[in-house]
Each structure stands twice: as structure tokens, then as C-alpha cells.
Image (cartoon, rainbow, N blue to C red; front, side, top):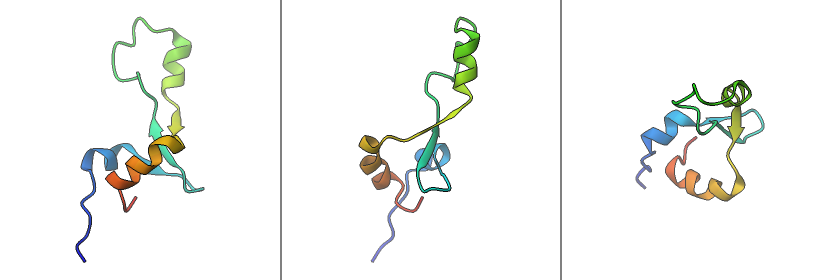
Length: 65
């Protein structure tokens, strides 16, 4: 039985938490930060968990994570 190939970009962006959930960086925090409020910029530093609606698609992309 062959092994599945993991999606390299998804592997680099996700981590498994201690409880088994997947964490990801917040969206909208990559660039153009100067016009966003300081509160919004602080909140970008936090990690978010992947929603259950997206889990099926992500498990297909990264089966061994």
C-alpha cells in the first residue's frame, strides 16, 4: 500500500495541540498592518484553531499530522 503525499504548504502552517486539535495562524495578519488598529495587530499574534467544517479537507491534505 503506497503512502499518501502530504501537502507541503499545509504542513508548514498547521500544528497539532496537546488535546489533538489543529492550530493555525490568524488570517489578515501578513502585511498592510499600518492602517489597522493596535488592538487588531495584537490579536493577529494569537493562534486560532481549525474549525470542524474544514477538518475533513485538511485531513486529506495532511494525513500524518
